Length: 65
Image (cartoon, rainbow, N blue to C red; front, side, top):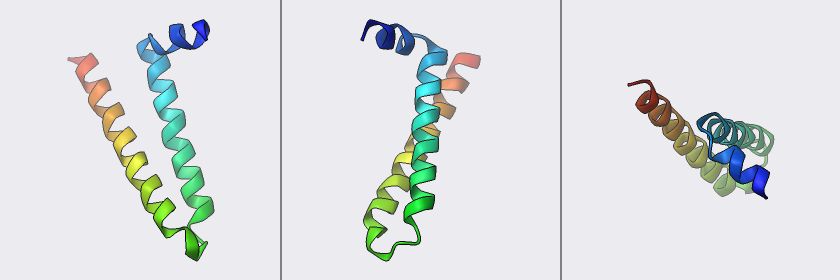
């Protein structure tokens, strides 16, 4: 647990965690889109992916200024 806390306390570690979340959402969405009964889940994954993407862009731009 301490290693995870140290990892997420670093900017690069948080970005890697958010990137992994974003790409996992993309993969799951790709796998679930063909299934007709998974529309709600696909929409939630799209929203989560978009939120994480926006958050990553905002964080990185704030560190560059």
